[in-house]
Length: 302
Ligand SMILES: [Zn+2]
Image 1 (cartoon, rainbow, N blue to C red):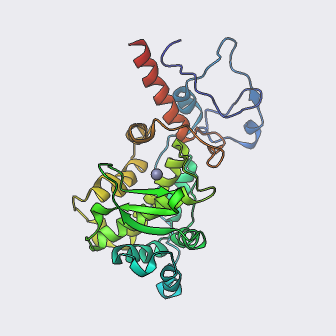
Image 2: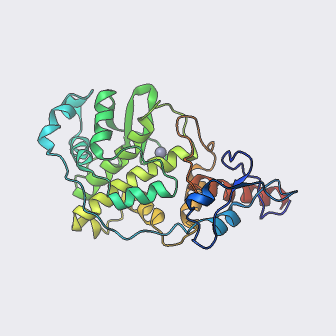
Image 3: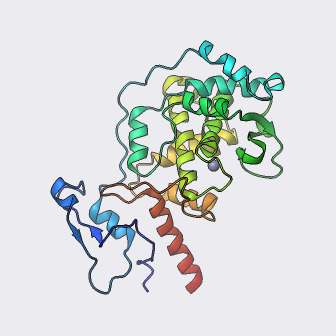
Protein backbone atom coordinates (compact mmCIF):
# COMPACT_ATOMS: atom_id res chain seq x y z
CA UNK A 1 0.00 0.00 0.00
CA UNK A 2 1.51 3.40 -0.90
CA UNK A 3 2.30 5.62 2.05
CA UNK A 4 0.12 8.36 0.67
CA UNK A 5 -2.92 6.19 1.17
CA UNK A 6 -3.14 5.43 4.88
CA UNK A 7 -5.98 3.28 6.05
CA UNK A 8 -7.58 5.65 8.48
CA UNK A 9 -11.18 4.87 9.29
CA UNK A 10 -13.39 7.64 8.01
CA UNK A 11 -16.52 8.77 9.81
CA UNK A 12 -19.31 6.33 9.07
CA UNK A 13 -20.49 7.63 5.73
CA UNK A 14 -23.20 5.09 5.04
CA UNK A 15 -22.72 3.75 1.54
CA UNK A 16 -19.63 5.75 0.68
CA UNK A 17 -18.10 9.18 0.71
CA UNK A 18 -20.24 12.30 0.31
CA UNK A 19 -19.53 14.19 -2.89
CA UNK A 20 -19.32 17.95 -2.99
CA UNK A 21 -19.00 20.49 -5.78
CA UNK A 22 -15.34 21.36 -6.28
CA UNK A 23 -16.24 24.71 -7.79
CA UNK A 24 -17.59 26.23 -4.61
CA UNK A 25 -14.44 25.50 -2.63
CA UNK A 26 -16.00 22.56 -0.93
CA UNK A 27 -18.91 24.24 0.77
CA UNK A 28 -21.62 21.67 0.21
CA UNK A 29 -24.83 22.89 -1.35
CA UNK A 30 -28.15 21.42 -0.32
CA UNK A 31 -28.24 19.45 -3.55
CA UNK A 32 -24.79 17.93 -3.25
CA UNK A 33 -25.14 17.23 0.46
CA UNK A 34 -27.60 14.43 -0.26
CA UNK A 35 -25.60 12.86 -3.10
CA UNK A 36 -23.66 9.77 -2.09
CA UNK A 37 -21.17 7.82 -4.13
CA UNK A 38 -19.07 4.80 -3.37
CA UNK A 39 -15.29 5.15 -3.69
CA UNK A 40 -13.90 3.85 -7.03
CA UNK A 41 -13.58 0.07 -7.28
CA UNK A 42 -10.49 -1.27 -5.57
CA UNK A 43 -10.02 1.83 -3.44
CA UNK A 44 -10.52 0.49 0.02
CA UNK A 45 -8.73 3.35 1.69
CA UNK A 46 -8.71 7.04 1.04
CA UNK A 47 -6.03 9.63 1.51
CA UNK A 48 -7.51 12.16 3.85
CA UNK A 49 -5.18 14.85 2.51
CA UNK A 50 -6.52 14.27 -0.96
CA UNK A 51 -10.03 14.32 0.43
CA UNK A 52 -9.31 17.51 2.32
CA UNK A 53 -7.77 19.30 -0.64
CA UNK A 54 -10.42 18.21 -3.08
CA UNK A 55 -13.47 18.65 -0.97
CA UNK A 56 -12.93 21.24 1.68
CA UNK A 57 -11.87 24.83 2.01
CA UNK A 58 -8.51 25.25 3.74
CA UNK A 59 -8.51 25.60 7.48
CA UNK A 60 -8.21 29.32 7.00
CA UNK A 61 -8.30 31.63 9.98
CA UNK A 62 -11.22 34.10 10.03
CA UNK A 63 -10.74 37.80 10.75
CA UNK A 64 -11.18 38.87 14.36
CA UNK A 65 -14.59 40.40 14.64
CA UNK A 66 -17.75 40.67 16.75
CA UNK A 67 -17.55 42.17 20.21
CA UNK A 68 -16.96 40.09 23.32
CA UNK A 69 -19.92 39.23 25.54
CA UNK A 70 -19.92 41.11 28.83
CA UNK A 71 -18.09 39.43 31.71
CA UNK A 72 -19.95 38.93 35.00
CA UNK A 73 -19.22 40.95 38.14
CA UNK A 74 -16.76 38.91 40.27
CA UNK A 75 -18.83 39.89 43.34
CA UNK A 76 -21.51 37.48 42.07
CA UNK A 77 -19.28 34.41 42.34
CA UNK A 78 -16.68 35.10 45.04
CA UNK A 79 -18.75 33.22 47.62
CA UNK A 80 -19.00 30.15 45.34
CA UNK A 81 -15.19 30.02 45.15
CA UNK A 82 -14.94 30.53 48.91
CA UNK A 83 -17.21 27.49 49.39
CA UNK A 84 -14.98 25.12 47.40
CA UNK A 85 -13.27 22.21 49.18
CA UNK A 86 -9.92 23.36 50.56
CA UNK A 87 -10.90 27.02 50.17
CA UNK A 88 -9.69 27.88 53.68
CA UNK A 89 -6.13 26.99 52.69
CA UNK A 90 -6.43 27.92 49.02
CA UNK A 91 -3.27 29.66 47.76
CA UNK A 92 -4.03 33.26 46.72
CA UNK A 93 -2.74 32.55 43.19
CA UNK A 94 -5.42 29.87 42.76
CA UNK A 95 -8.14 32.10 44.21
CA UNK A 96 -7.27 34.93 41.83
CA UNK A 97 -6.96 32.55 38.89
CA UNK A 98 -10.48 31.25 39.61
CA UNK A 99 -11.75 34.85 39.69
CA UNK A 100 -10.09 35.38 36.27
CA UNK A 101 -11.58 32.11 35.03
CA UNK A 102 -15.09 33.43 35.78
CA UNK A 103 -14.38 36.46 33.57
CA UNK A 104 -13.44 34.52 30.42
CA UNK A 105 -15.78 34.95 27.45
CA UNK A 106 -15.02 32.85 24.38
CA UNK A 107 -14.38 35.34 21.55
CA UNK A 108 -17.26 34.46 19.20
CA UNK A 109 -15.14 34.47 16.02
CA UNK A 110 -12.56 32.16 17.62
CA UNK A 111 -15.21 29.86 19.09
CA UNK A 112 -16.87 29.51 15.67
CA UNK A 113 -13.55 28.86 13.96
CA UNK A 114 -12.44 26.18 16.41
CA UNK A 115 -15.78 24.40 16.06
CA UNK A 116 -15.43 24.58 12.27
CA UNK A 117 -12.16 22.62 12.32
CA UNK A 118 -13.37 19.92 14.71
CA UNK A 119 -12.90 21.21 18.24
CA UNK A 120 -15.88 20.31 20.42
CA UNK A 121 -15.95 23.53 22.47
CA UNK A 122 -16.88 22.37 25.98
CA UNK A 123 -17.76 25.70 27.63
CA UNK A 124 -19.17 28.95 26.24
CA UNK A 125 -17.42 30.93 28.94
CA UNK A 126 -15.38 30.62 32.11
CA UNK A 127 -18.49 30.79 34.31
CA UNK A 128 -19.66 27.48 32.84
CA UNK A 129 -16.32 25.94 33.81
CA UNK A 130 -16.48 27.54 37.25
CA UNK A 131 -20.04 26.26 37.73
CA UNK A 132 -18.83 22.76 36.87
CA UNK A 133 -16.02 23.08 39.43
CA UNK A 134 -18.36 24.31 42.16
CA UNK A 135 -21.17 21.85 41.37
CA UNK A 136 -18.78 18.86 41.42
CA UNK A 137 -16.98 20.23 44.49
CA UNK A 138 -13.63 20.04 42.69
CA UNK A 139 -10.56 21.16 44.60
CA UNK A 140 -8.07 23.33 42.73
CA UNK A 141 -4.57 23.44 44.17
CA UNK A 142 -0.87 23.42 43.43
CA UNK A 143 0.84 20.06 43.58
CA UNK A 144 4.13 18.29 43.03
CA UNK A 145 4.19 16.87 39.52
CA UNK A 146 7.74 15.55 39.80
CA UNK A 147 9.71 15.73 36.59
CA UNK A 148 6.56 15.96 34.50
CA UNK A 149 6.58 18.72 31.94
CA UNK A 150 2.80 19.04 32.38
CA UNK A 151 1.51 22.42 33.52
CA UNK A 152 -1.63 21.04 35.14
CA UNK A 153 -3.59 17.83 35.53
CA UNK A 154 -7.08 16.53 36.27
CA UNK A 155 -7.07 13.77 38.91
CA UNK A 156 -10.48 12.17 39.01
CA UNK A 157 -9.78 9.97 42.02
CA UNK A 158 -8.92 13.00 44.12
CA UNK A 159 -11.53 15.24 42.44
CA UNK A 160 -8.65 17.64 42.00
CA UNK A 161 -7.38 20.01 39.37
CA UNK A 162 -3.67 20.17 40.11
CA UNK A 163 -1.53 23.05 38.91
CA UNK A 164 2.20 22.38 38.76
CA UNK A 165 3.67 23.89 41.91
CA UNK A 166 6.55 25.36 39.92
CA UNK A 167 4.13 28.21 39.11
CA UNK A 168 3.38 28.93 42.76
CA UNK A 169 4.66 32.22 44.15
CA UNK A 170 4.36 34.14 40.90
CA UNK A 171 1.50 36.60 41.36
CA UNK A 172 2.07 38.48 38.12
CA UNK A 173 -1.12 39.17 36.22
CA UNK A 174 0.21 37.20 33.23
CA UNK A 175 0.78 34.07 35.32
CA UNK A 176 -2.63 34.36 37.01
CA UNK A 177 -4.25 34.61 33.57
CA UNK A 178 -2.25 31.63 32.35
CA UNK A 179 -3.22 29.55 35.42
CA UNK A 180 -6.88 30.41 34.79
CA UNK A 181 -6.46 29.23 31.19
CA UNK A 182 -4.86 25.99 32.42
CA UNK A 183 -7.84 25.51 34.77
CA UNK A 184 -10.17 26.12 31.81
CA UNK A 185 -8.36 23.24 30.03
CA UNK A 186 -8.52 20.88 33.01
CA UNK A 187 -12.18 21.69 33.70
CA UNK A 188 -12.77 20.36 30.19
CA UNK A 189 -11.30 17.01 31.29
CA UNK A 190 -13.47 17.13 34.43
CA UNK A 191 -16.63 17.78 32.38
CA UNK A 192 -19.04 15.09 31.18
CA UNK A 193 -17.99 11.74 32.76
CA UNK A 194 -14.84 13.40 34.03
CA UNK A 195 -13.01 10.08 33.83
CA UNK A 196 -9.24 9.65 33.61
CA UNK A 197 -9.39 8.23 30.09
CA UNK A 198 -8.15 10.93 27.76
CA UNK A 199 -8.08 10.77 23.97
CA UNK A 200 -6.71 12.81 21.09
CA UNK A 201 -10.15 14.34 20.51
CA UNK A 202 -10.58 15.17 24.20
CA UNK A 203 -7.17 16.86 24.33
CA UNK A 204 -8.01 18.85 21.20
CA UNK A 205 -11.25 19.97 22.88
CA UNK A 206 -9.42 20.97 26.07
CA UNK A 207 -6.61 22.71 24.14
CA UNK A 208 -9.39 24.67 22.47
CA UNK A 209 -10.52 25.83 25.90
CA UNK A 210 -7.12 27.18 27.02
CA UNK A 211 -6.74 28.79 23.61
CA UNK A 212 -10.08 30.59 23.93
CA UNK A 213 -9.17 31.71 27.45
CA UNK A 214 -5.82 33.01 26.24
CA UNK A 215 -7.41 34.91 23.36
CA UNK A 216 -9.94 36.50 25.72
CA UNK A 217 -7.13 37.78 27.94
CA UNK A 218 -5.11 38.99 24.95
CA UNK A 219 -8.15 40.87 23.65
CA UNK A 220 -8.95 42.49 26.99
CA UNK A 221 -5.48 43.29 28.32
CA UNK A 222 -2.88 44.89 26.08
CA UNK A 223 -0.13 44.10 28.60
CA UNK A 224 -0.83 40.39 28.32
CA UNK A 225 -0.90 40.62 24.54
CA UNK A 226 2.55 42.17 24.64
CA UNK A 227 3.80 39.70 27.23
CA UNK A 228 7.31 38.54 26.48
CA UNK A 229 7.98 36.60 29.67
CA UNK A 230 9.77 33.34 29.26
CA UNK A 231 7.34 31.51 31.54
CA UNK A 232 6.97 27.95 30.25
CA UNK A 233 3.33 28.02 31.21
CA UNK A 234 2.82 30.85 28.71
CA UNK A 235 5.40 30.33 25.99
CA UNK A 236 5.28 26.55 25.86
CA UNK A 237 1.63 26.37 26.86
CA UNK A 238 -1.24 28.74 26.42
CA UNK A 239 0.38 31.22 23.99
CA UNK A 240 1.81 28.41 21.90
CA UNK A 241 -1.54 26.77 21.28
CA UNK A 242 -3.20 30.03 20.29
CA UNK A 243 -0.43 30.40 17.72
CA UNK A 244 -0.80 26.82 16.49
CA UNK A 245 -4.60 26.78 16.23
CA UNK A 246 -4.58 30.12 14.40
CA UNK A 247 -1.55 29.35 12.27
CA UNK A 248 -2.25 30.66 8.75
CA UNK A 249 -0.97 27.33 7.35
CA UNK A 250 -4.20 25.85 5.99
CA UNK A 251 -2.92 22.33 6.69
CA UNK A 252 -2.12 23.08 10.34
CA UNK A 253 0.95 20.85 10.18
CA UNK A 254 2.67 22.47 13.18
CA UNK A 255 -0.43 21.98 15.32
CA UNK A 256 -0.85 18.42 14.14
CA UNK A 257 2.85 17.70 14.83
CA UNK A 258 2.56 19.11 18.35
CA UNK A 259 -0.60 17.13 19.12
CA UNK A 260 1.14 13.95 17.92
CA UNK A 261 4.23 14.70 20.01
CA UNK A 262 2.19 15.27 23.16
CA UNK A 263 -0.85 13.05 22.72
CA UNK A 264 -0.12 10.67 19.83
CA UNK A 265 -0.09 7.68 22.20
CA UNK A 266 -3.72 8.18 23.24
CA UNK A 267 -6.76 6.54 21.66
CA UNK A 268 -8.37 8.67 18.96
CA UNK A 269 -11.59 9.25 20.85
CA UNK A 270 -13.91 7.84 23.49
CA UNK A 271 -17.71 7.80 23.65
CA UNK A 272 -17.51 10.71 26.09
CA UNK A 273 -15.66 12.88 23.55
CA UNK A 274 -16.68 11.71 20.08
CA UNK A 275 -15.10 13.16 16.95
CA UNK A 276 -17.50 15.85 15.66
CA UNK A 277 -19.14 15.28 12.31
CA UNK A 278 -18.42 18.28 10.08
CA UNK A 279 -20.40 18.44 6.85
CA UNK A 280 -17.91 18.76 4.00
CA UNK A 281 -14.81 18.90 6.16
CA UNK A 282 -12.44 16.47 7.81
CA UNK A 283 -12.17 17.09 11.56
CA UNK A 284 -8.73 17.89 12.93
CA UNK A 285 -8.53 14.59 14.81
CA UNK A 286 -8.70 12.64 11.53
CA UNK A 287 -5.89 14.76 10.11
CA UNK A 288 -3.84 13.95 13.22
CA UNK A 289 -4.59 10.25 12.70
CA UNK A 290 -3.56 10.46 9.07
CA UNK A 291 -0.17 11.92 10.00
CA UNK A 292 0.24 9.35 12.77
CA UNK A 293 -0.55 6.56 10.36
CA UNK A 294 1.97 7.92 7.84
CA UNK A 295 4.70 8.10 10.47
CA UNK A 296 4.00 4.62 11.78
CA UNK A 297 3.92 3.18 8.28
CA UNK A 298 7.30 4.77 7.53
CA UNK A 299 8.76 3.40 10.78
CA UNK A 300 7.40 -0.03 10.00
CA UNK A 301 8.77 -0.08 6.46
CA UNK A 302 11.96 1.86 7.09
ZN1 LIG B 1 -5.27 17.88 28.72
